[in-house]
Image (cartoon, one colour):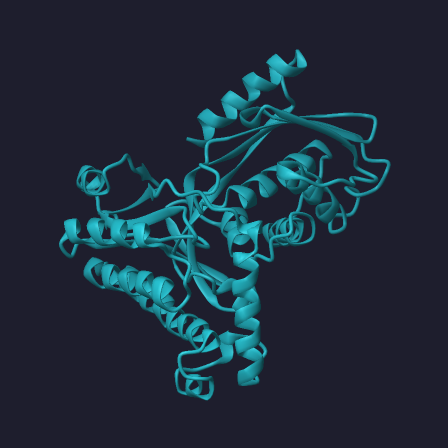
Length: 365
C-alpha cells in the first residue's frame, strides 16, 4: 500500500513540477486497539500502524522556502523556513511541523537551509479517528529532513509532530498518535508508556486480523470537545491530588463526588489502563475471546463514563460484535464523537463484518 501511494505521489510531483522528485517518504495512519484518552493522562496505550497513510514527494530548493501542494485537497502553500508564520486548515500542520522540527534538529531551522518542494497525497479518511493529522505531520517532517540531508530519531519526530498539533492547530492531543506513526512496526501492537515514551512491540497472532469500519460520522478535534475532556481529566486529577489520572486507583475514585463528571472521567481512565495490559496478555496467549471482551468493555466505558461515543456508533459496535459470536469484537477507536470502529477478529471474517456493518471495511492488518 505505501509503495503504491509513494509511486503515485512521485507521478503527481512530476506533473506538478515538470521533473521527477528527489525522493518520496511515507508515514502510516494508526489505529488504537485499546487505551483511549490515556496518552494525555500519562497512561499506557496499545496502538498499531495501519496500511493507509500519507506520502510526500520532495525535491530540495536553494532559496530557503517551502513550496507545498496537497494534491488530494487541491490546495497549495508557500512559506519561508526562517519564518513559517500563518495558520489555517492543513497548512497549520505543515507550517507547524516546519517550526517545531526546526527547533529540535540542528541545521533544519536556520535561514541557510535550502528549502523544499513538497507534494502531499494521502489515502486516510479524514475525521475517521485514524490519525490523518499525525500521519501528515510525520510525513512532512521526514520529507523536510530528507530534503535537507538530515536525520532525526522517531521520538524527536513524534515530539515535533505533537507540538505542531498543540501549538499551531489548536489540538491539545497527547503523544500516542505521533509515536505510533513514527515508531510503530507493521503487524505489531505498540505498548507505549506515554509518561516516559518507552515502548515494546507485540506481534498479532498469525490468524488474527484488524479491520476498520468507518461510521460515516465525521468529527473535528479542534471543535472544543476533545480539549474539554482533557480539561475535565486534569480537574479530576487535581481533586485527587495526583499529577495525572494515571496515578489514581479504583479505591481513590470514591473521593470524587459520586456520579460527577470528574468521577466518570477518572473511572474511564483507571479502568482503561487495566484493559491495556490485559490486552497485551491476551495477545501473548492468542486469546481472541478475551480480547473481544476487553474491546467491548472499552466501548461501554467510552459511552458511559467518557461520553465520546454516540448511539449510532454504540449500535454499530454491538451489531458487529454480535455477528462475531465470541470471535472478537468492535469498538470506537480514536478520540470519539464519530470516526471509525476497530474490529479485532479471525482472518476470513471480513465479509461477515461488512454484512453486519452494512458497509465496506478496510483491512488494517
